Length: 485
Length: 95
Image 1 (cartoon, each protein chain N blue to C red):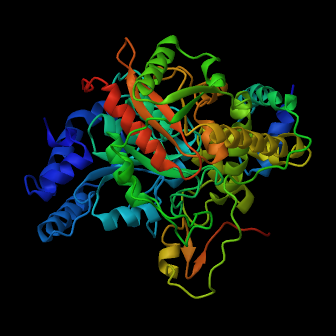
Image 2 (cartoon, rainbow over the protein chains, first blue to last red; image 1 turned 60 degrees about the vertical axis):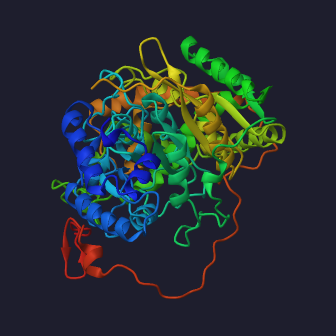
């Protein structure tokens, strides 16, 4: 087994025992990248030079015994996180040459922990998409089947982890963009509670929904990453000053006596029978370790997609107004006056899906339509949140499929926005309600594509999610497979 | 039709987005489908419901009014498509 195939917690032990050096681990990751990146295309850019500098520093720290569990661990960063002095594109032409003057808070924290940055991972343009096909920098393939999408928008991050082109990765999730690609690539992905992880330096898509989180090879790694990412940040006004537990404490614990809610509304519309079977099997596994399964109702589930695709574009149209060719980013050379410069810069700088969402968002916020669309959606959002509040009075966590189907084919939904939007049907509700959710591998379809189980918890209950996800991972003993690349 | 070509053009103007004729045709059709899908929400009774704008209830995030280090003018201008002295340069606004 190559070093790049290990988990972060396994490598961390080897690094601390001096069995391997950070440089050797990084060598292994870059060898893997040389071998498979041509097929997968998980990265927009590689940070080879600074990565080796970080590896030297990590080895020095390790030799002095000043390491953390992430010291010397090579990770991929979704190209939506600002990295000081290194291009950050958000998958868009409009930011092709943007070099941030500062680090995102999560980047600062990971640097301080001694993690090594391998590169910036591919993503849907401005995180708008569910397949990573809207990136200006080309598509990413699913490592399990190169003709399939890796999911999105954090498709590059999830594919890089699944293909062992890094040990773990950072993603962001506005409507499922961590959990959906993690599920479709057979890895673990956690979207924390809104406000749990600082969004400072995260390029904004929909500010009331965006959250940063980890994509990892197993649940233990996910807990380790959360220990380093979570926490209050005075630079981010929606960051919540809630104490951060040691997420590792939730591992290896029993879930006997827990009530696991299974919402009936998640087992109707267009769910693939193979996915349903895998989810039913997961339910039996949990019953086998003493969890009590209770059917629950989240009655406003059928309205989540419509609500989301009003609120998210509305916020996006406002956030993306800043790309005007003045302060940073692309400027069209064709504008003869200021107005024409704006219009051409944005026409040439943004791709199709981003333009579509800017238009929807501007429309639903415009005079005459605001009440009918934006206000209505904000009211339904309150009802969606109330559904969860009521459900969590009765159950510890909620179990659902992560996606209705396994990874679909590249190009299959590219020209059909609604079909693409519906692929987020099970993940969107968590963002609207602000609650945390985790996707863990549940098994494979007959075709060999991974399927994910999703657990949802109440606000700030990431620990509970890690506890049940870890219990499930231990008990389910999903066959260890490796993508054939 | 929920939305006409002229409305798409008007909204694109508000958003400072130039569209080609082909884009106007395509987006008009796609936006119609999307807005029809949104109609689902009309079946939900929200007469007594306060709109929700944030997932977590937070009070104002106050802090002490102290000066902290910030980026230099050089760094702030480093990404500008066109700069002159300490200023961003833009095409002519007034004749």
